[in-house]
Image 1 (cartoon, rainbow, N blue to C red):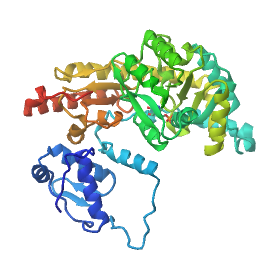
Image 2: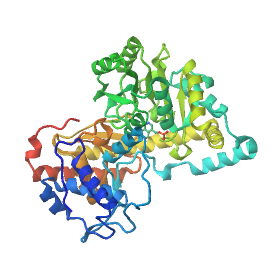
Image 3: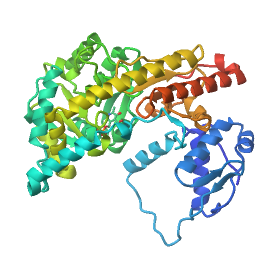
Image 4: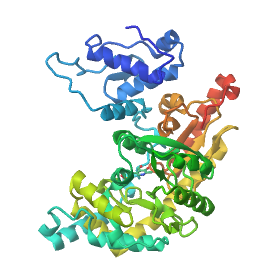
Length: 492
Ligand SMILES: Cc1ncc(COP(=O)(O)O)c(C=O)c1O
């Protein structure tokens, strides 16, 4: 087959290559077992870097369209068949098409077994307090029995709400159990909170970079992101002011504590200024406090919700990064009529959450097991972060910068300006280290020299090994193509 690259297109070259292979398969012109051109040959033919072709092939492999065998090449996977002529292609909604296009544009992180997983933001399963959770679940089912197995209250388990309200109090937030709505992870909380204020065609101000799944949520709701660039100390407040002044911008979504992907926590003055801006604009702030419980005992600035006399802040919380994501329990703190509105939206979307899980989490929190687990987790993460940061100091070449988070899992690295972290990823994976390329966190999916590392799945030794592999690769790449060192800067 002949590949064609449209240089005017917004779609990245690697996506164009992958899409053309998919189209050929769909049309039956490429069949299971057919060989794709060698990476080097296709790169030469198209005049692109071989990492770009490799990234396209990796994406296809991750989707099961192709299989690669070291030394033999890349082939259309067994079992991949052309679309049946009788099968009708249903017309999907334009919003869904937009979400699909957005997902396709994300750089894929191949699952390379044995590679150091510095890309993952899922706590290591070995750290989950499984025994304590099993005992808690047994206890609530023994005591609550059938009463826990009906449709629960849309607002969530009352004891867990009460305990969470008390915990928020310790962070300086005045909240009652009635002001909390439990939800299916912070992810559902994000969608519900945004739907409180914005409908299809509206816009939401977001930090750039930001949590990539928020971008998917915005697309799926027909909302447009308006970007507010992130600096070392948080969102650019002048840009935020301009964004909030736009009439169609209905809210600001922010991650002030252990930002994803940057890992930074904004200082008190920034938080106060941000809230003053929002108050002047009369716009709500959705504070994603998904890692609030990973703070280091009072050294962090109070959450936005604790500094908010006007009731502008809707705050999201999650147990996913402190216990385990599988319980799918998060909460939304809201004030006044927003609580009733959230309950209506919650009923409309899924009636209610699973009560046995929330009841078991309430036992973990009430018994002190959650706090004991947190203390251990924070110590482990502190050691891992230290190992990673020391290894970066040691291994990364001049011209690389990174954040120094005070807690949480993630560290943001900016490679020397002309390197593209998504293009570098397939080679990094081959050499045994994975990271999350910056491109996926930017609203416009632009090339980026930024990348996110985490210590969720990597202990101290693995974190140091991963940083060493990354450092070596970056140094080699710069040496191989010295012009990269002073080529035009890629925006981070
Ligand atoms: C900033 C942010 N918010 C929310 C979530 C999702 O949390 P949950 O598992 O509670 O849905 C994540 C997951 O990585 C995240 O990074």
